[in-house]
Image 1 (spheres, rainbow over the protein chains, first blue to last red):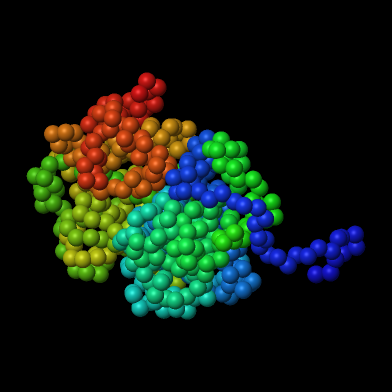
Image 2 (image 1 turned 45 degrees about the vertical axis):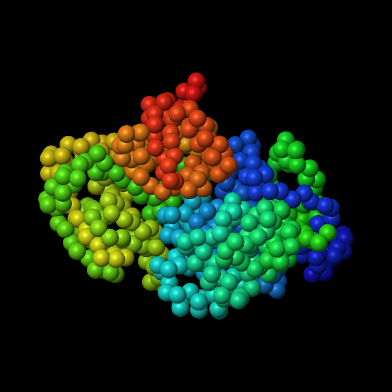
Amino acid sequence: MSAGRGLVEVDTSPAIPAISAAIPVVSAAQMAEVDRSAIEDYGVTLLQMMEQAGSHLAEVVRVEIGGDLADKRVVVAVGPGNNGGGGLVAARHLTNRGASVRVVLARPAMRMSEAARHQLATLIAMGTDCCVATYDLSDEELEHVLATADMVVDAVLGYRIHDAPRGEAERLIGYLVRSGRPIVSLDLPSGLDPDTGEASGAAITAQATLTLALPKSGLFTSAGAARTGRLYLGDLGLPSVLYTALGINVGHPFSAGRIVRVDQTA
Amino acid sequence: MTTSPHARSFAEKLGLLNEVALFDGLSEADMAAIGHATTMTHCSVGQQILSPNDPPDRIHIIKKGRVRVYRVTPDGKQLTLDIHERGTILGDMSLLGQSPLPEAYADAVDDAVICTITPDQLRQLIERFPTIGVNLIRHLSHRLQAAESELESMAYQRVDQRLARKLLDLGRRFGSPTARGTLIDARLTQQELAEMIGTTRETLAHTVSDFRRRGLLATTQHRVIIRDAERLAGIADGDGSD
């Protein structure tokens, strides 16, 4: 695009800037407190946060898939909680932005969190292809769907899970791992302990991870970093005074962009 | 989880919310009698139980086995909404003052026994078992209040209020009396309970242990026993003292 008269020529190439300053890492308990405070003390709704998370996730998928979503096949693997809800928001954005999206839920729709169900209702109304692993797809169909994907989104489990995955989530993670396809994880690779980065059972090894608001400490241990891939940090737009009140010195991590690259070795 | 009432009704419209407790408080003998007064169907795996083309106003109660409720998309693909077990009511809920599940199908996940009730049969059952009528009235009035109280509950109430309200609700639906109080007979993780009331697991754990300390509830093997429903109801109503 040529610069018009009176416009300053700028370099627009770096799609996602690297973070310029050190960023604090948080434990799962601290993150839970951040979430609680955002909702209870500042009136930020879960749906607002979920929208930010999913919108950023779609953008990270675009970058990781090579720059353009048009006609790319993306499978979004969705767990029953609010991490899954973020995945469902991403599925909407990915669809809007030209990707061919298939949503695979770990659990029946009614067994998902209320906010995730809300997002799912929108996808159903949009006509996005949604199905439940085990019940709506045979094992062979699920394997085929994953094998033909250009990118798989892992929104199965979030930072609140410390134990090894169980039940439907464990099964779905197993399929993702066996597919060998490139994976972008939301918040942290599913199956990782958010504090230690250890995997005590089935766990994802991602090509890239978009973590939200503040990085979880498990992403920086050697075990965690080995599974995280490229690490991005996404802004949830939480009131910054919230961190001050909780004694977390955050600074301005998003001064260069609402999604930033984080170097785990720094 | 501060979903607005509008958002909630939207999810409801799409058949993503659906709960009725019509037969609460009936004895095993009553249930057996109801079984005799209605049509029982034995279904094999994969057999269809419900479809949008069914005659209206029928409800189905799962007596045995598991049933999958699903939607079919315009291009013929299925989306499983829920897996129901024994005791669940399915079907045209307009009879119960609830919008019918749009485009809902159901089939048997394993060998199932289904009891089907027509509107006439329901009327007769209410005459014979007034408890069903009472449950129906309670259900309808609950629905009338639901929109208001949901708004209040999610937007303005404190976590202890929301938890008290949810526990009482679960007690009514899944509760069975024991020597120590009402046992909520449903395995619930703290995460699931936290999500139900829109809080974090940590806050929930803190509130549960607070309730336990105050003698309001006890916990045993992932199940909750309501020790003092009366005080819990006080908290649910927002009594400032507790």
